[in-house]
Image (cartoon, rainbow, N blue to C red; front, side, top):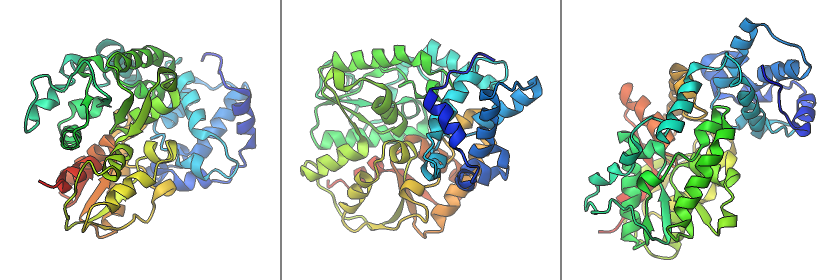
Length: 387
């Protein structure tokens, strides 16, 4: 293994761990698999061995790497840590080190190959990134790929290519058009935000993606970038020098709230009972909990009930941290627990602000014939638009 590169602060944080097990109690992977070795506590113990210069044999490395990558990076362990340890950053640093060995999952090589080759995580033709616009009610000739606009809608890989998730950009485009927003998408000029590289321990490769996307936005004269994907939004928020380029970035829930407050869209009554799932990267990473709830509150007639675990304590859907690529079964088991929690509220629909959360929960519900409507908040707002 290459020499670990941890900051002094991270080294001190590992020593601060008291072994209290609070992290294990909230870990979605531990709860779904019934395996304590998937916990942050077990991972921390392994990290201490590494930093203590105690080497592991090949079998131990392989087992340990398997626990590190079977994690959604949801950040709930960090949220509850009484010592205030930045656990999520530690796991990303640990993944970075493991990618330098032969013991990281083979799918990590696939993620790297796809992104460096096709500029999207699914290895699809990047020239087809805007093809979802063909399903708009009034398909524009330019596929919304305009050279100049005040707002750029950064679509994200999942919404661009997965049919289940494509309903989200379709809905958001309809809402933006109804509000007469001067906006554009970037089509093939948009590359993956780089978040999957970070989660794969390949963050050093993200710089090319960051600079490309910034340049592509700025050359359109845009001042605002809107994201329906919380992971794209969090990546820009934490790793893109967007302020230096004179840009403002907003998650779609924040932008929708602005449009409602400015009375640019009018909403009709909806007879529907919903609950709301806080996406990990919008909530625990970006600390945005109010905007989506403000949008829900603005829809007349809508009945809203909170999940038993909400806001900072919201349970992960199972779709983060590249887990679906590494261990699809564990991802589905986490989704099962999430859907069960949603059903316990009695709501007929679960609303969220994340295309990956929609895809994960909806895929589980469909495969298991669970009578549950799963909607992104943009889809809900489109439903509520006055004719």
